[in-house]
Amino acid sequence: ACAVMLVAQMKAALGDLDRVERVVKLGVFVNSATDFTDQAKVANGASDLMEKIFGEAGKHARSAVGVAVLPLGVPVEIDAIVAVRGG
Image (cartoon, rainbow, N blue to C red; front, side, top):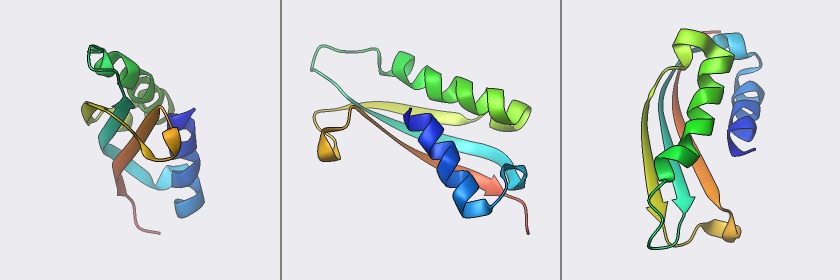
């Protein structure tokens, strides 16, 4: 759901997803217990969605980080750097 919301924000900001030239990087923060080490697996869903929507342009660098707490108690937070075509 978090990655879907990220794409919705891209569309709201740009007016059209065709303006996305490429997804440069995703930062995925996962609210994790100290013994949880599968943050990358959690982040795979967001990465897979970017590739499904944007094709080759959706391939990106990524960081997946476990954190003790996130704002408002959310389980996952994602930020993105996106290259945009003029418009």
